[in-house]
Length: 290
Length: 331
Image (cartoon, rainbow over all chains, first blue to last red; front, side, top):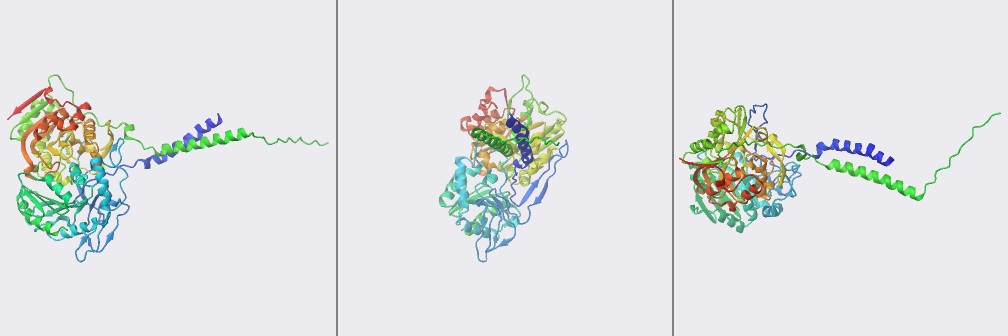
C-alpha cells in the first residue's frame, strides 16, 4: 500500500511536471517552405481582423544564405573561385563544393542551418522517404549528389551562365539549384519521371532577353546520356520541329528543349520576342555545358 | 535516591532475505515505473488529431430538385461560368451576404494563361465578381504556389483577375499555416493556409491538366495547393493522398476550368503545342463526379485515374456522374 501511495503522490506528479515543462519543445512547428527562385520570399500575414485584409511584402533572403537543407539552394550574388564551402549542418545532398576553376568565376552556394525539424504533414505509417517509384531513386540520387563527380558539372554550369547566353542575361546573377528532394518543390508531380531516369540535380535560370522578355532555362543533370535521352524522349512532341542544337532538340511554340550528353535542357519563353531568342540561347548553353 | 530511567535498547531488526529482496525489488520497480512514465510523457508529442481542430464542412444543404452538376460549353469562358452557375441555381445558392469566401484557383506555376498550367484568369474573375455581387464580406483568392507565388499570380493573370472581380489576393508564406486534423487513411495532420480554415465558404476552381504521376490534375488534386511543407511526402501513395485531402476539404462549390487543357508534359507544361482548347466549364458540388466528367477532356476514362476510385471508395462522390442531376448547356 505504501509503495502504491508513493507512486501516486510522487511518481505521477513528477512525471506530469516533466511532461509539461518539455512539451513545448517536443513539438516544434514545422518549417514551411516557400519556393523562392530569386532569393525572394513572398510573405503575407494572417488576417488582422475578421475582414481579413491581406498584405503582400517581398523581402530579400539574408545575404550569404543560399538555401536550406531541403534540397534547394540559391546561390548568392557573390562569386568566388578556388573555394570549397561545406554546408553547415546540412544533409549531404545540399553540400556545395566549388573546385578551383581557373579564371572562370563560380558562384558559391552555402547551405545554411540545420534540417527542418519536421515536415508539415503526418503520414500514417510512412517513412520520410518517398514512394518506391520516387523514393528509392531519390535516396540514390541524394547520395550521388555528394559524390565528387557531381561537383565539376555544377561549377561548369555556373560558369556557363556567368556571361550572357544568346544575348540573355541571368536575372539576379545566380542560378537556383535543386536536388532530387527539392525537385518536387519545383516541378511537383513532374519530378518522379526525372528521378527514375537518373536525375542528379537541376540548375534553374531566369533569363532576361535582349528584348526585355523573360525566359526560364532549366538544366537537368541526368547523370549520363541514357537518362537525358529518356527524359527527352518522353517530352518529344509530334508537332515540334527539330531545333538543331545539342545532340538532339526540338522547338515548339514558346518552348525549346534539347539534350546534350548528360544534360536535358528545357527553355520556356513568355512572349513572342523572347520566343524568337530561344534558338540562340539554346545554342550558347549547349556549347558551354560540359 | 536517584533512580535512573530505564534504558531500553531496541535491537536492530533482523530482515529476512525474503524481505530484503522484496523491498529492493519493489523500490526498483517504482523507480523504473516513474522513469518510464516520465519518459513516455516527455517524448509524447501533442497530436493535432487530439486537439480536434478540423476544417469545417463548407457545403450547403441540398434541396430537392437542386442540380448537382452543370456542364457549359462555348468559346467564351466567362459566359460558360455564368451559364454553369446559373444552371446550378445561381451563386446565391452557395454564397450569402456577409460571408467570407475563399476562391482557390490553381496558381502553382510561373506560366502564362495560354500555357494552361494554371486556372484561366477570366474564370476566376467571374467567380469573384459573382461572390462580391452576392454580398460576400470578403473574397480571398489564394493558392500555395509551386513556383514563387508572386510571379505565379502575376504571370498567370490571376492577381489581376482577383482585383478585377473585387477580391483580395492572399500570397502565402510560412506564417499563415495552421495545423489541422484529417481523418484520412494516409494523412492524419496537415498545415493548411489560414483562409481555408477561416472562410465561411470555399470555392474550388481547378484547371484540367495532364499530370505525370496521377494522369490528371483537376478538382481533387487541387487541394495540394492549400498545404505547407515539402511536397515530396505528398507523392507517397498519391492516389490515397488525393482522396484524403479531398475528404479534408469539402468545398461549397467547384468550378472546373476546361477552357484550355494541358494535354502533355503536365503539371507545369510550357509549350503551347501541349495545349488544346477545351472551352468547357464543369461546375457542381460533387468533386468525384466533376473530375470524372473532366477526364474526358483529357481523353481519359475513369478507370485510367485511380484517385477517382479512391475518392468514391471514401464516400466523397460518384464516378458515374450521369447518375446525378445533370444539366448541359452549349453556347
